[in-house]
Length: 179
Image 1 (cartoon, helix red, strand yellow):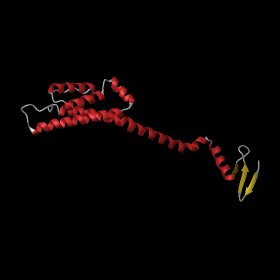
Image 2: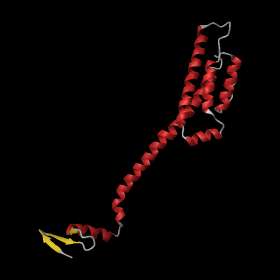
Image 3: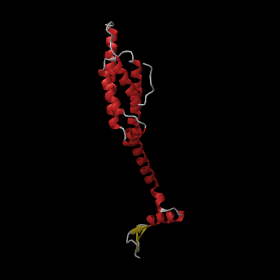
Image 4: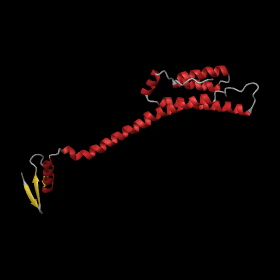
């Protein structure tokens, strides 16, 4: 082992690794050895930061790509149930009812049901696969309900519309409403 004194610093060659250590480095190593803490504890801030970053990334993924589509699906399902109730009496204007208000309500119904059909189709694409499997186990079929909603928006016959409403309620597991 070779040592050299330079301006109040002692430089020593390490016999194990060949590195040149000064007295300041030796003091740090001696303090670490005296505290009897493993070297890993020096890297704990790094591990904490790494753990926080990984946890944040997982949370971001779950919130944006798992929970948000599921919550959006449930909101559309609720809005569909609401629209079926609100527009239940606006299927088609009768032969004696040529009021502008009723024609306006029929067009609002058709527009709302087309919008819900498009939203239901769009959200079904973004749902995670495990949730789609859960929906199938519950006998919920949103994509079939979306096509029924589109058909309902084009229906002007009360009997056919009532049948489509029942199918939509069955496909989305919505509570039955009085027609």
